[in-house]
Image 1 (spheres, rainbow, N blue to C red):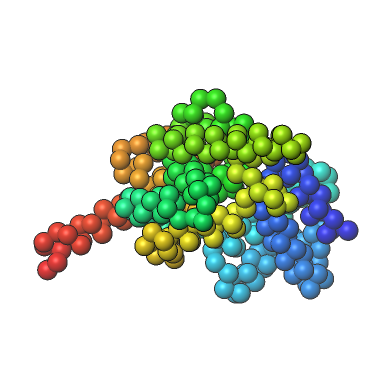
Image 2: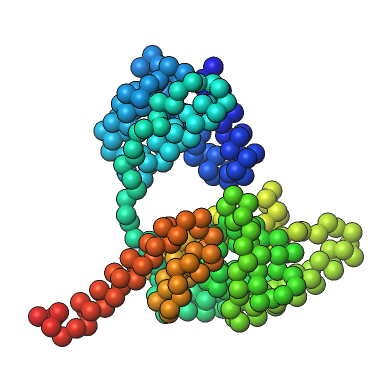
Length: 307
C-alpha cells in the first residue's frame, strides 16, 4: 500500500506546485530507493520511525553518495511524510527533526567574455543553411542576454517574443513568469528569426498545414527543439569557435550571464530576478565565483605573488 503514497504525492506536486517532469522523476527515483531499503528491513512508509530514516541516511553515506544527493533524498522523504501527515495517512512525521548534510559548495563553471564572444561568432558562421545559422545565432544571443534555463529557451512560445522586442516573457520553474530585458544584439537576432518564421508560417498556411506555436519548432514529438539537441549544438559551436568543449554547456552560459553582470556592477537582487531564483541565497554563489576570479587574477599577475 505504501508505494502508492509515492504516486499520490507526485501527482499532488504536479497539480499544486506545477513541479517539472524532471523534478517528479527525481522524487520518484529517490523515494523508490528509500522504499526498497525499508522493504529489506521489513519496514514500510507507514511503520518507519525517525531512527529508521536516520539509518537510511547513514546507509546512503556508506554508499559514498555526494552530499547533494543525500540532501536531495532527505528532502524528498521529508516532503513525502509532510504530505502523508497532511493527508491523514500518518499521525506523525518521522523525518521532521532530521537535519540534512547540506549541499556541496561547488562553484559553478563559467566562461570568460572572450569565450562567449567566440561562441556567438561561431553561431553566425557554422551551419549548413542560412536558416541554421540564424536559428543558432538567435538561440545563443537569447541565452546569453537573458540567462534563461535551457528548458525555458527551447520551449519558448513565439507569442512570448511578439510585441515589445526590448523584453521577453519567460515561464520559469513552478509556473512563475518573469520579464527579462534583451540586449541590442539579441533583439536584432530575434527580429531576423521571427521574420523568417513568419515567412515559413505563411508558406505552411498556403498549403493548409498547421502552424507551430513555438519560437524554435521541430518535427519531434515535443514540437520544439530539445535540450539534448541544443546541448550537442553548443558543443559543436565550442569546437568551431576554438573554445574547449569540456567548459561549455547551456548552463555555463547561464552562469556566464550572471557572473558577467555581477562583475560589471549589477546587484544581486536584480540578478536573482533575471535568473528566476526563488531565494537570493541561490544567487549569492556568483559572488564567490567573482571572488575566486579576482584572487586568481592577483596571484597570476601581481609581481610579488610570483615570488
